[in-house]
Image (tube, rainbow, N blue to C red; front, side, top):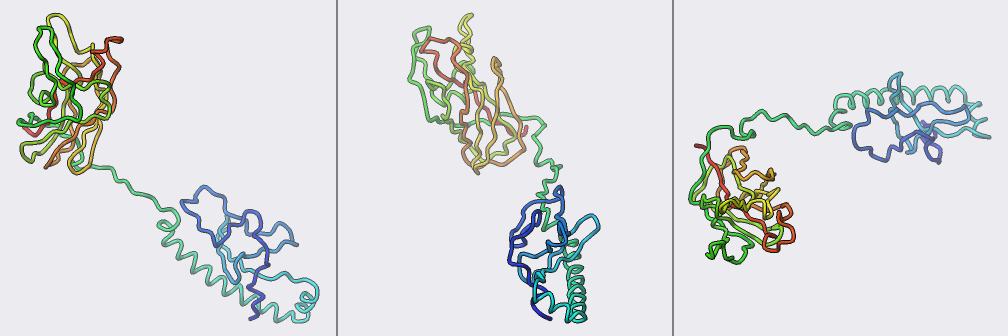
Amino acid sequence: MPDEWFRPDEEESGPGEPCPAESVEGPQENENPPSRHADSEETPISSTTSGTIRVLTDDTGPSVVVGHARATGASASSHHRHFPIWILGVAAALVVGLVLGTFITQSRDSTGAAQIAPRALVPASTSTADMPYQGKVKAIGGVKATASCVSDPAVGSRHELVRYDAKYVVDDKPETAWRCNGSGEGQQITLTLPHPSRIVGVGMINGYAKVFGNVDLYPQYRRVRTVRWTMPDGTWFNQDFTDDDQDLQKVMIAPRTVKGDITLTIIASTQPGSLGEPTRDSVLISSVQLYEES
């Protein structure tokens, strides 16, 4: 069979025809299929790649489009002289095209969901291992703490020297605290467990929960608004805090065995409660607790 029956015109695709050499990513369910008909009798349907059989689908079902050469001048008269051969050539081409088109269409029908419209499957988690712990808890004792920032000692209202080392966040005394001058954002407290533990939750007092006489020091300083808890394996979660709440604010997590240090990083803090007072431009944390199953 002559090559000219499968060779398209050396021109670009008509409007609305996708180029077969280009790949299209993502689902195409909402796009209108390209027309398989020419705009007029003078505009032939052509394939952009020589010898390519393309399967197009419209409202009437799949159809086969075969590239062909434009018949003009002497070539056209030659076609008239060999009319029966021309008919046989076209018929044979259509038969071959229909067979191949049916095969291609069936292949796409059986695998189209994976090839044309891939979808990331995110099954809803029903495993209790992924759910926050809901039972009774107890604070883990013997936790050690160090910090990336510690304010210098200050003289208290009773003229005593007040220290603000990181160890005061794990001494179970709300009136003592770790302190860092400024907003504290980006500063870290590293918590070292005495032994591998199955952690089910964390808790923190997000400010200076100390009352002297009738003076409440909590609202005078900055309070922590958000922290990030980072586990030894690099996984992390954020905890947001309610301002003006001086109690331990807890959050339960899915139980996990921890071997190593847990890092607490300050993400955000409030403005000082006493504006214009330099000694109050500090962030303090009175208590930090790690919980295990009771």
